[in-house]
Image 1 (cartoon, rainbow, N blue to C red):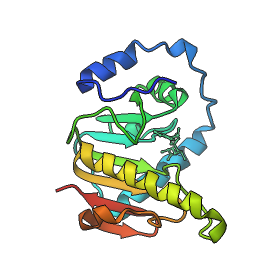
Image 2: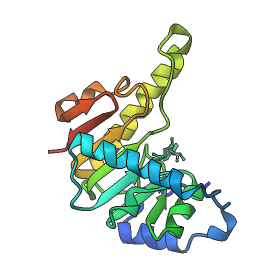
Image 3: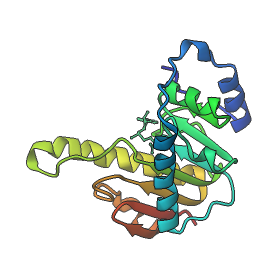
Image 4: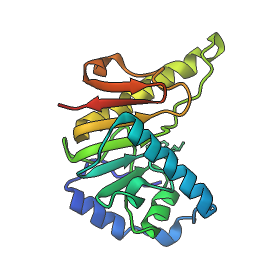
Amino acid sequence: MLIIHRMGSLEKILADMDSYDWDSVDDYRQRSPESYRLWRQHWIDMLDASGLSLTGSLLDVACGPVSLGAYYPDTIGLDADPKYIKAIRKQSIRGIIGDFRDMPFDDDEFDYSVCFSPPLAPYELDTLNIQRDLESCELVKEVTSEMIRVTKKKVLIVHTYYANAFAPQEFKHLVEKRDTNYILYSCR
Ligand SMILES: C[S@@+](CC[C@H](N)C(=O)[O-])C[C@H]1O[C@@H](n2cnc3c(N)ncnc32)[C@H](O)[C@@H]1O
């Protein structure tokens, strides 16, 4: 798998993505239009609940095959799986293959970033899973730190289950709003 590391301007990264060998990437198996609708509705509900109003550039971190770019034109999706980036590009959404622990963007590159259901939870909070919990803590810290680094205004992280259980203390002072399923950070 190709992971693009920090390597220059956003335009250059997008141009590199344009010339990527997409034929070598498997196609994502499409789901029904209804499942896409429900998927997207969940995000809209979370945006509404958090009060996040998007009016500028948006980075959709770990976007998967269905990005918020379907709603917000100035969106770039990032995912480690080329299959998902191929899928969103087919929907005319700009997408970049990358690792959310080390994103290929400059500081403050985007106005907003969102991450819906990062691959961290659920983990049972019992002694047998302490090691996995520690790994989750580390991963949440890395992705939160990277998102705050590349974002000028607000960062929204939505967890599906044990929301916030692994939220890093380092960024506590930036928390603007939180609830069971999400944390909204203000980067300024
Ligand atoms: C549960 S899915 C969430 C997808 C989408 N955001 C949604 O709400 O349906 C987790 C996503 O994280 C991506 N992912 C896993 N590890 C990653 C990494 N290190 N960097 C970037 N994306 C990653 C996976 O490829 C997958 O698309």
